[in-house]
Image 1 (tube, rainbow, N blue to C red):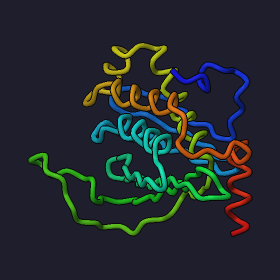
Image 2 (cartoon, one colour):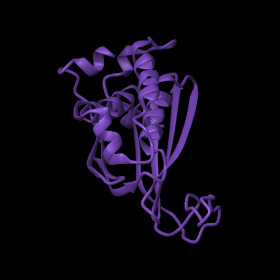
Image 3 (cartoon, rainbow, N blue to C red):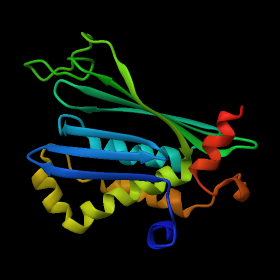
Length: 202
């Protein structure tokens, strides 16, 4: 596991946590700088914890550009995430995190036979929009899973329901965080605030 996860001295401007998990439902809280997001009651109808962990892999391992999209499903509310992680000279590695909320039945609803519906009945609203360090985003995602692992994988699967704990996805995230970047500008990796401010100056 990455030293960034072991070290208590690492101070992140990003915080992600899961809470109130039970009977196939969970809440999520995200903070990036001054931007905050709370999602109440997303369900196990999607493989959400795998998708979130995979977003961390994308942020940690993406080179010039890595686009990751997934949805959390509130049955019927959909929270669609788009995380675009890039490397740009002068900016280093940064991620643009956008969350859209669809309040009604949308792409990820399921019919009575278990088939996905592709129709959309509601317009979306962007409820979260922030820039941050890709490295710190990946570390924050990995740290969010530590409390779930502490409670036990079997306990997680009893509470979550339809999908297993994302063991292999997290192993891939650990490997990505333990592997040095091919291009690296350490002076630009002091935190998301520097990335945000430099991005806004463009």
